[in-house]
View 1 (tube, rainbow, N blue to C red):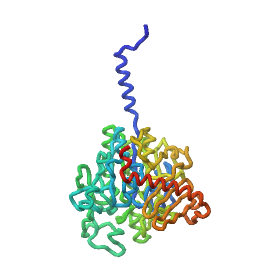
View 2 (tube, one colour):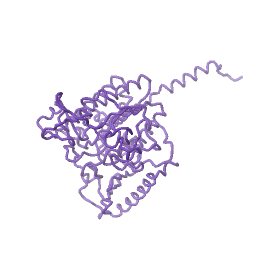
View 3 (cartoon, helix red, strand yellow):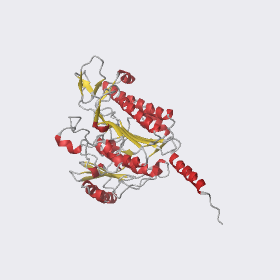
View 4 (cartoon, rainbow, N blue to C red):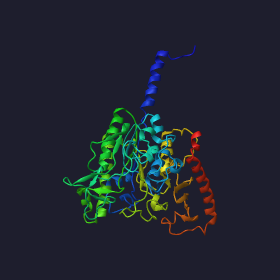
Length: 475
């Protein structure tokens, strides 16, 4: 007679095995993005003027990207790429304040919510309007933009606290009734003193159920965000949930506003730098606050943080693109190569820089790879997993990166960039490994490389065009 365990002994064994599976902690994931921060607007990329000690500390403990790209040269399109893994033109988001995140798109928070994650979005949204009832920011409430209404909770987020677009970096809901010399509503101003007269900036923070937030909206805007992020994290821990959050800071998008404390760090510089640098340093302090919170909660080792900017620096600001050519709204390197790092204590060896080309579209497939989950259908994904590159196991990118920001399109391989000016039908070719500043157009020296890259680019553009027509959603 075979020796079987009694059924009453098997039941607790099954319960024990099931409980063990549930107790395996999935990593928490935080995607931090700043707004219009140039490649050289951080200490860890060599800037000796801006004080970013917390960003520098985290970067030093993680993996710094020397060659990280935003999927577009301006904000709304890049944001679409972050949570979908797809080029934003597939979703018909070509520029800021154009289009919206379609309900058919598959997002990171949607997939992670199915894995049991708590999901939250904080900061700038810019992927659709947040209200149909009132005039808000650039588009909200206007009849012509009703079709672009879509809020984060329609795309997998449990909760959100965000604005539709830009706000001042200090006292985000107001601006001065009058400006002093060197100040302006477009660029920025010294933080409003207690007795100054003020005006409403014309935008609002919105939260769950399309409710306007009215409390705790004064002071450093980055702090205003962290005051919502930290309770979200605490609640996830209370519920024994892993969490996923996108924190999309407005800083240093114009208008840059800085208080006297942070301006004082730069008191020997002109007002433009005092405001711009002061806003970045104030943001940096909140990055430190977040890191310390993770430490106090004992979850630094269990949390992945990805940091990047959404595009290059705005024109006519102290923002720097380093040696790279041009700035925001351009597909030359200065418009799309941005500061970035990843940190996951005890899981990623820190203190390294890599020159592996990566892009914001890579976040989704990388997270899927780490969590060992499958993408739910066969539509085109433009990003790739960079997990092996982060671990140091891959040195070169095999899949090119395509960019579209009319009137330019470009195609970037591990070594070369082909860029086209659509109106003139002029193509240029640059060797990015040996000419980071894109000074020498080598297309006449290497016509065969240009021909092959052009064929690949045109094929990819055709695929993007098909996606923009909604053809992916049948698959």
